[in-house]
Image (cartoon, rainbow, N blue to C red; front, side, top):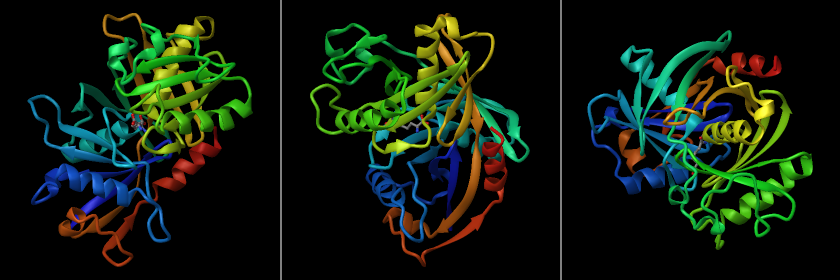
Length: 325
Ligand SMILES: N[C@@H](CCC[C@H](N)C(=O)O)C(=O)O
């Protein structure tokens, strides 16, 4: 039997599939089919926002390799909330508290952090590289070399936007009212993740409200998924934009608290280093594991009767943490 571990970071939900436990790893096409089928919710299956595939690293150093597959089957170069949960998985599997994980474009440092609350394990992960140059984006940058707090009338008539790749692409705007935070975000997210002339490969769209010094609320419409409860790379990129555009509101010596519809994370922005990076710290919660015959995973077969589930009780502690915020 093979386990799919249902996990979340700020209620951004994933299934972890450790390919090293399989007799035969799934092919790329099989992984895409698995994500498309298993991320869909139905009356016996909770669904998720993506699948996190763990493999042996391709070079010495990292403890494992993480590949991110969005719910629609598209492949993403990074996932911040997901990396925290993979860090926990590898930490418990290998008995290490601080190590690196190979991702599509970089080996990233991860470590066990102080629990966010009783029964809420937390991990810290490196988000990098941080890129502004237009070559880092799958679009022509609308005539700009980089977009930092620019009005983009072809996208919206009153908001200003920033684009940052970490290295997956993010479009960020600081908004003031709930209409923009919800309806405008949904409209722009839908439009830029359907066929459109500006972002042909789609983009993660993050709208943030400034709640006070070092305090944000961020909502994200994710490429390949739609609205999610939280996006780790989105909250990290938005924290970086916050420090850049509103320096008077950010004390870089203190963490930024980033609230989101699924909870809260902390970020530390390191903008001045030769290699700018962001530290993302947040929960890594394991909800349950579903055990399947390996052949069913190869065929993306999901029926009410072809798996057994073993639950943890971590969600109760996580809910208590969210209520305490
Ligand atoms: N939820 C993730 C980001 C997942 C990938 C994203 N949808 C993309 O296509 O770039 C996170 O926590 O960072």
